[in-house]
Image 1 (tube, rainbow, N blue to C red):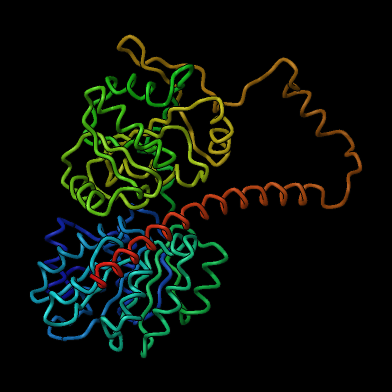
Image 2: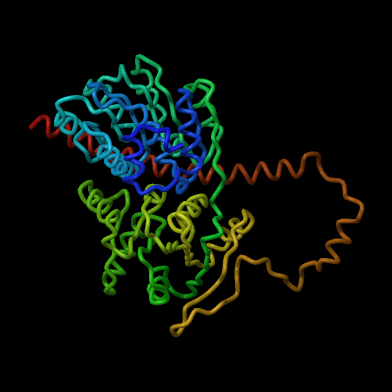
Length: 448
């Protein structure tokens, strides 16, 4: 397939060091050549970013003075990382103009620096919407609209911003929608905006066998103390440490630095300048240890992460998958350590039921030792033996209320959805507060 691509696209592939394309990249290229809308269900690590950058390379016209592509991502970290990948595209295509517009960037200044409109705009939904509303750029000739991490985009409450963007487009662009999951809300979105889309589903790599999941008991220690205890037990190239909140991330980074372990801190609460510096330092692999919050768990996409440490388990367990997925990439082995306390046992049990298989170890006196595994079902004295269970199953079933099991499962799902909504609401509030502060600062600067 590579031989049939434009020379500039082949140059782009060569600059990235790709020897061959992934299945998702091949499929997306084939569909976009037919100008079809796409819904691509793929996890990070399957090559999905280049699955839309390659079609963009094929269709972009650098001689045009119009904006032709808009790429929307839900967080600033994700937008910046895609922008860094797109800058490689600019090296392969002379004259290509790309602009990053997200929280912490001066959208008007970044656009005004260019004598002509950028060919590609990359940014968060809110900032992209602001561009359209303020007439900073025309979208009449936008040919391709990419929505990356679409499920997160909807969870963060950015659908209204996306609505404004679509309404501003005179011509219907080709829409490429990339997502890790396909919830009902996203299906409604797809039916509303996409025209007979092609659904591309990439094999689930959530439980990649190249990643070892190891449980570390904290016992009487704090997460930070247990972390400090195991660090001498492995030699990472880059170790990513995930905390469950910005406050815990700050505490962990301070704790490690106080104990002589230099580390990088990255989360949504940092000042814009500090966030940009942290992302650049992360990409350049200046630090061996990186402490992050879950806001960054789906935004950190760099090679060289050999180890991940999870300080407890996130409220939304799917985030554990994204944490672990930062390692074990491109055929390499990876290790995900999960330091746990008693309150984490329910999460461990849930992940076990979903197919995760953990080892339980502790690092003591310079040696790794296997310990009791809390994820394995325990046989208690009062529990029925396998024989007794089999006999019970063969007994005549007792009468129960109609749809008892169905109602019970519905109640469980209701509780899970409620917890998920609570978590999402907190993230939405964080993003909106930050965006309000940014808009306030802009108004203040304009008045001055």
